[in-house]
Every structure is written in C-alpha cells, then in structure tokens.
Amino acid sequence: MGYFLAVANRKGGVGKSTISVMLAHAFAVWGGKRVLLIDLDAQSNSSLILTGNAQWIEAQKSSRNIAAYIEDRMYGQNPIADYIMRGVGDIETDDGKPAPIDLLPGSLQFEDMQDELISHYSRHNTPFRQAKARCSEHFRRALHFAAPLADLIILDCAPGISNATQAALRLADQVIVPFRPDSVSEFAVDKISMIIEAKDAEQLIATPHNERKYKCLANYVRPGGQDQVFIDTIAADHPTLVTQMPMSGDLANAFFWSPERQTLEEKYGTAVQPMAALFRELSAYIPV
Ligand SMILES: Nc1ncnc2c1ncn2[C@@H]1O[C@H](COP(=O)(O)OP(=O)(O)OP(=O)(O)O)[C@@H](O)[C@H]1O
Ligand SMILES: [Mg+2]
Image (tube, rainbow, N blue to C red):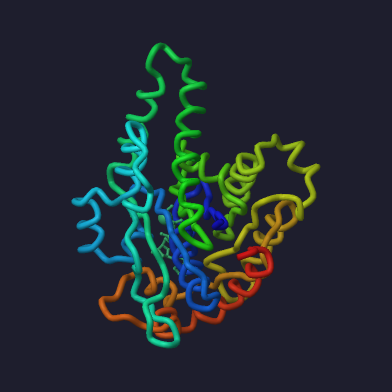
C-alpha cells in the first residue's frame, strides 16, 4: 500500500507546490518509485508544473481532476483511477524513460465543490460542526482509495485549512511543512503543527519531536547565515530537517513545465544538490 506524504502550511507562497513536485521527481527518478501527486489546490500550481497549460486545460474539459472525482463520489462509487493522468512531467530517468509519475490534477472548481459538499452534508438541519466533520471524512475516504495506485502518494495542500487540507493531514503518514525563515513563519508553523497532531499547545510541547508526524523544511534560505536565527527558533519547538533549500533562481525556473523531456540535472541546475540532500535525508524516514 502506498505511503501518504502531505506537504502543507497555512501560509501561502512558502514552496509547498515546488517541494511537492521536487519530491515526486526525486522519489520517481532516484528512488525508482511509482509516485502519484494529488493536487489539492484550486490554483493547480503543481499540476501546471507537471503537465503545462494545454494538458491541464484538457484535464478540466474531460473532468479528469480532483473536483470531479470528489463530487462524483457524492453520488456513486467511481474509481479514483479513472480521474488520474498517467506518466506526467517533463523528466526522464537515466535510461531515457519518462519518470513514473501520475497526477490527480487540481481544478479551479475545487473551492466551489467544497462549498457544495458542505451543503450536501448540512441537509436535514445537521449542525455545522457535524457537517464539517462528515465533509472531511468524505475527503479522507475518497483520497484513501489512492493507496494501491502508487508507492508514494504526495498530497500538495492549498494554503489555509480547508476541509480538504484537514482530511489530507489526517490521512498522511507524514507531513512536510516548508517555511520561509522570517518573523511570521513561527506563528504559521505553530498553528499547523497543532492541527497535524490534533493537540493543543500544551499537549504538543509534551510530545517529543521524534513522535510527531511532521517535519519542517526551511526554504528560500539566503546565503550569509542571516536566516539561521529564524530557523533555530522553529527547530527549538518543532522537528526540523537538517537539509535547507536555498533561495535559488534555478529552483524558481524549475516551476515551469518544459515541452522537452530533461534529466533532473537539466531541470534543476544547481538546485539538484540540495534536492539530492533532501531526498537522502527523507529516504531515512519514508519507508517506501
Ligand atoms: N527555494 C526557492 N528559491 C526561489 N524561488 C522559490 C523557491 N521555492 C519556491 N520558489 C518560488 O516561489 C513561488 C511560490 O512557490 P510555490 O508555489 O511552490 O509555493 P506554495 O507554498 O505552493 O504557494 P501557494 O500557497 O500559493 O500554494 C514560485 O514562484 C516558486 O518558483
Ligand atoms: Mg501551492
């Protein structure tokens, strides 16, 4: 059964989609694993990185996307495999084959669909809290059907804490929390860690770092060491990976899909070194 890895932070623009796609590439090419990425964000950034505009638009038209899948499961038992795009991405393995990455694409309809789901579960005057819990359980169950389809299932979460994100955090075997080393990141990491662990602040502090199911990852780290004070503040309270992702023009460029297949070295340029370090460090924690 596949291992569920969520990439989440309440804060926007911290590199969730970039890291999700990077991990999909690393585990597929260097780890030789079958990877499925599920895009839980209406912005669909990771889908666009993996497929480019034209294929993503096609996936919207043909209803092969997360919103169509979750909505269809309100009324039937449609298999998740019917909504998945196979062999996506612009990366080839060392022997020239497409990297084994599948995608359940994101959809612009995803937010509207979540509202519809809440109305569905609010029928018959069901109290809001109960409706929300049922909605989250609908997501969790629907996503769990992906388990047999890949060795590693990466859940790229939207910023904020939607029902879909809460379900992904419950389902995940492990969560990576990318953060920008700045003065507000501490607050964002504190918040999401309590949601991941389903604990209040006191209970969280009493939980040893090695018993928590999330790991923080410093991203956009500038050279010169001035960010270290923010990273140390996070690491004092939260399990934090030793690997740091530098602020990198090559990494920013890797955000764009290329019509030609490339090697990881070609796509990521100088960022391939920290990417390899991240892959090595995570391989010790991710049993796939
Ligand atoms: N280490 C980095 N160095 C330089 N640019 C980066 C780095 N990591 C991410 N970026 C860039 O920052 C922008 C935001 O990244 P990304 O979309 O991955 O963040 P996100 O957390 O998924 O955002 P959102 O909350 O909107 O989903 C993108 O343009 C991406 O290319
Ligand atoms: Mg994103």
